Image (tube, rainbow, N blue to C red; front, side):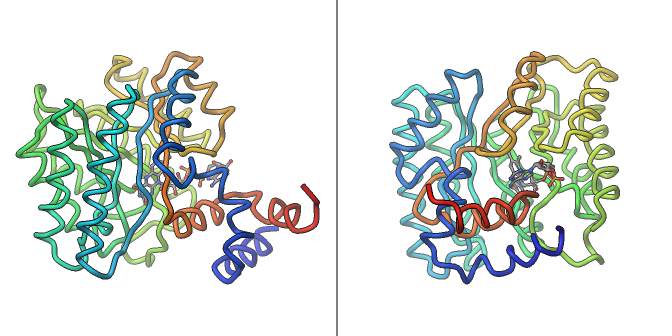
Length: 305
Ligand SMILES: Cc1cc2nc3c(=O)[nH]c(=O)nc-3n(C[C@H](O)[C@H](O)[C@H](O)COP(=O)(O)OP(=O)(O)OC[C@H]3O[C@@H](n4cnc5c(N)ncnc54)[C@H](O)[C@@H]3O)c2cc1C
């Protein structure tokens, strides 16, 4: 079935957008901020924290970056006014990272400042390998200025990641802990710089996580992979990590039963809630990872709803 999933995944970008929306909508809160508020309130009621993400990435004109920045600042206002228990995630390429690094920093700085006004927190998502050095630089700069209000994502599939964590440790202290979301990594990267095999990625994930926990860095243990979650439980026990020193982030629409089982064990869990008009690239990445994508798509094409 693997080859069939791959085939379906490769034709997704060429399918009509309305058809792709049918399978995509489970991964997206909706197109508007009202949708994000509604979904987040429900998740809060169900016992989950959230992180809000306005969809969009890899813009081609700097004016778009400014528009996105202003939109994000309004989003923060709305989310805060609605009393949502959540923070913010963003992709730097949406604020001009690949066009003008300095302008991107200034745009994101304004967003972080807005979150800081509410005592809140912004997480910088990690994008593909061309962005890694720049995103680490951006994080360093922001962390210096807002020591308690910014975090970064690191990808266990990158061969460099453990070194990156070690290098960034100069910014870590008991009063101002580093805060990393650790995920496997979603972009297609060459073998020269990234581990490709499932076992290899998982081994490095747990190695990175162990280093993070040993050092007292705050991790977001971002995975839906049961062996990794079980590995994380073992490490949390081994290092006797207090419940408020880590969290399990999971993606909206993925593995809700697993999500529930994690909070039932008393761990804190944060759901990543993406929303917005620019849903296509994010959703197709999610669909490609879904082991059931082929059967879901076949069902949607042939079963009347
Ligand atoms: C909160 C959060 C934030 C993230 N941020 C980033 C980021 O900034 N940069 C980045 O590169 N990556 C990011 N990712 C994506 C991540 O890198 C992985 O690609 C993704 O989480 C799938 O890996 P996995 O650990 O769940 O393991 P996998 O081995 O891919 O999946 C394990 C199991 O989870 C279930 N599953 C996984 N994905 C789906 C899906 N789409 N639909 C249905 N079931 C699914 C399946 O049961 C699968 O067998 C993030 C992930 C999370 C959870």
